[in-house]
Length: 440
Image (cartoon, rainbow, N blue to C red; front, side):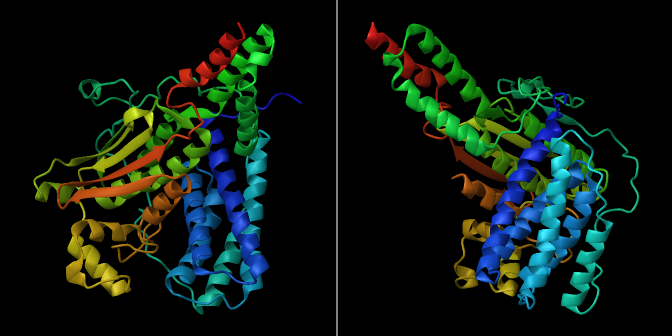
């Protein structure tokens, strides 16, 4: 059998979705053992399905996106309506059917085949289940247009590298930057396997002075390769974000310039999936929820075109990376946030005692949204919750800054692993040099 070559964007979809399905499977198994689902498990599975839906839709894998959309409605019902799951076995069966279908389709991609599974039966089963538990069929209004329309103007997407200055960040056609991670032949290896190899490698470095010079040279080469294999830049993530925005602008009446800078920075692969998922939610929210329509922007004295920027930079002392997602949209209104939170019953102290920063934090609460009708891209109160959840899983943080009527920025910070070598690869090599020199 010939070697399987997987395209970069398919590869990142595979890695992210496989990781999500693995975590989702663990949650389902835990609920099966306990004989029940708690609120947090429902929230977790909701985040997983929401992300799978978004990623699959972006990649045009509709036979995964369709059942995910319907399952999201079921989870929304159980999460926000505070309903009890009366038939735990039926719900478990439904989740496992979805999990099995997604996994089988991903296996086809891994083997270089097309995903040709028909999700019609699964989708119908989910809809029937929802009708049964709600007692009636729910028809949700969608903000998505039924027909694509031609854009009046060319939308601009640009991704620049780490060293590019703002002077050269002008409006250009999007061209993916050259990256050492692109167009390579791939073999799927789990993060756990890479981490195990890296642990062995670090242990060997400590004993380099007991090895022959030839072995020491090989050990240096092994260390260099493992560091590169265990790391990746943000080029593919930036391309994924670009595709997301481009797809959204086909269906909503907005004009947006999208920019990514610093995509050449690298970080451990184990963290990229979570960062990517968080960024997708933040960028989708900025375009769909933050940026106003051209008509609204004219009324506010703004240009018809809004912007969404993703700026990736290294933190001081090489401690990690900082990513800022900013837009020049409508901004956050603390009083509207507090009114919604009060109506939802999630305020923990009197309304008037909330500071602006505390009011902004409410957007990260599970199920919180200021929209009355959920659309395809936002309105279910899962995006901001999912973004924070993904970052917290890798020890990251997120905060929000906003000026009403001016725009909003989300600032994420993720530290490098202590032993990753990202603070300075030469430090890692120095450990080997020290051992070699001590032997001379």
